[in-house]
Image (tube, rainbow, N blue to C red; front, side, top):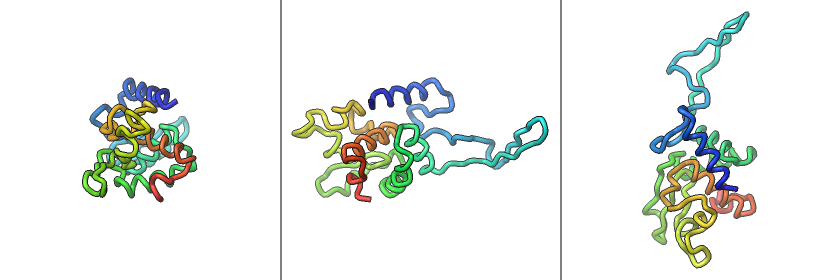
Length: 165
């Protein structure tokens, strides 16, 4: 299932010029417009003013999570946790704050020793076993990070147990 979701999203990214490439962090705003201007939409009878939509990093996380398949009712909590964990920055990397020396990666600060490193239960790592990622560094990709976070959410019986909200 995850492979299908990732393949679908990746195919949109590869073939759509408005989607990010490997170096971009998140997609452009849903309704991009010229900076600082209000665009006029003309119709046959009137000109309608369309407001500028500028998305914050956390709004981009919300939109991307929706695209990845997160349930709508969970998006508010997801964005609050992403803001607390990484300030909605996909490249966030905690290398020093865990007592056990483990590291946390990406938007949702997914822990390496728990989820993407080999363990006695998963020879390659839990997220690798699910074929969501190949290495822990893949968690810097916001699409893969949110997909992995959703797998952990489902692993916890659709609760936020892994993040202690």
